Structures are given as C-alpha cells and as structure tokens.
Length: 157
Image 1 (cartoon, one colour):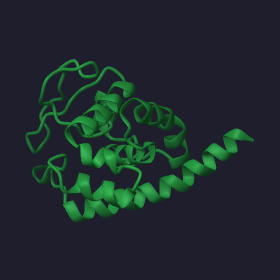
Image 2 (tube, rainbow, N blue to C red):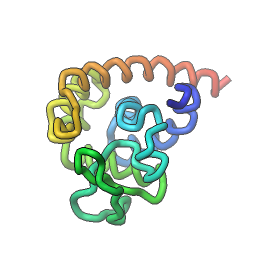
Image 3 (cartoon, rainbow, N blue to C red):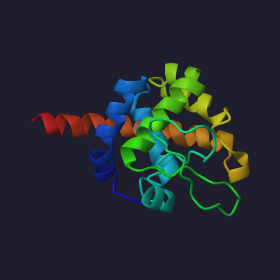
Image 4 (cartoon, rainbow, N blue to C red):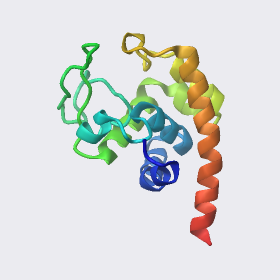
C-alpha cells in the first residue's frame, strides 16, 4: 500500500484529467482507484496498469487495446493497459457511458457509492460485498476530499 500523500500526488493529475474528459468527480475516481488497486499497490496495477479492476471483456477502444491478464484464481481475466493514464481514461469512459447515473451523482459521494456498489460493476463472483463496498467507497471519498483540499492548498502556497 502506497502512502496516501504519495498516492494523491501520483494519481490526482490523472483523476483531474478523467473528470475533465468524462465528468466523473476526481475524488470518486481516486476513491475507486484506491479500493480497486489497494492504494496503487496491487499486482494488477503494477503488472498491467489496471487501477480499477476492470475485467478483460468488451470491445477495444482508444484506451484499451485488447490485452488481458492471466486468469485470476476466480477465473476472471482483467484488462491490461499500456499506461496508468489509459486505465484512468478507460474507467472514466466506462462509468460515463455504462453507469451514467453514477457519473451524474459522482459529486455526492454516498449516492455515487450506492450506484456503483449495486451495479454490475461489482462482481460478487470476485468476492465483493455490495454493502461493504458502498461503505468503503463513501468513507474513502470523504477522507480523500479532505486530503485533496489540504494537498491543493499546500501546492498553491
């Protein structure tokens, strides 16, 4: 697990770009990244630049060229990206197109967490518990919101 201040410094610029391109709130993007990648430290993130646990199905697009990870213990395969930016932008593309309600309420952390937790984005096959996931996303959003404000204030002085 990466220290939270390092995580914010490394990934906030990508979350900001994702918000600008796709309209998904930067804090929600970072919270989802933190959960799905173990604060940037998962092997899926390290080996495949997949920071959001996006499975390796669907059509190729501008950000995902079709490469996949080896099957996980649960049999799932995940997308493999050329860069962290591709992972962030594919996540933004996915949420804004397939989970439009979640994208629309991404500035209201509890509402976003509910929409994501009770959507097909979460795979109970992979061991996810919807109610726990909702609480975790909400809590991390609230924590990151405070940390990002402090980080941005320090940067501006």
